Image (cartoon, rainbow, N blue to C red; front, side, top):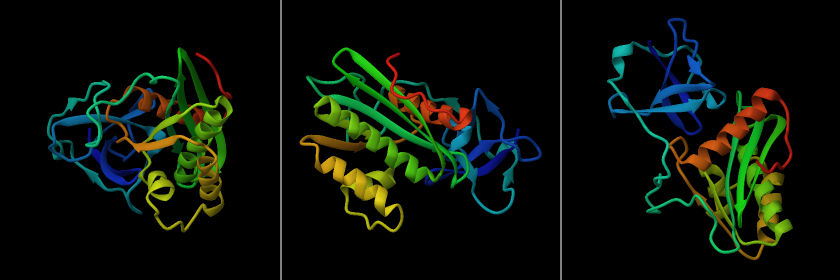
Length: 229
């Protein structure tokens, strides 16, 4: 099968497609490559893939060499951490938050996985017409609101560089000013909240599940509210 040039958040990727350029998915996931010959095959949510340009940019099957599927493990996906957590420490609230959008803007949703003590809560929320950045920011807002409700320290991981930039690194806010201000205010009201960036689609189990919850909201156009699986 050929490859189509697409965008996955802020990266250009090559995605499996048919001869007409329609993406080929299995269970809502599409095989992608970040580089033609890096030897690693990843799978991205169909809802998170967007055209990289105005036309169909299709490459033949031979454009990418054989790739070994990256297994889902809890290995780190950033250079800053030797390990990524899969359980909370002490009394903290450990959160992985993600957003998804079909088109940008388009139907959008968010997913949050929150762990504290021996408990786990999950949120899949449909946002209606929005951008991916709005979905990512709102997912973080929901996590901060939960941390304030529970009165627990918050350690949150997101694969949105945009959200990390505007919330913790002083990036200039050109869009979504009211939402960014709202999330900042919620963070300021929390005495102990730490946000970290994790690369998406690298097999980090909790981050992948947050993505699945966000995609589910987009596909079903429904919100679950907080649930305890």
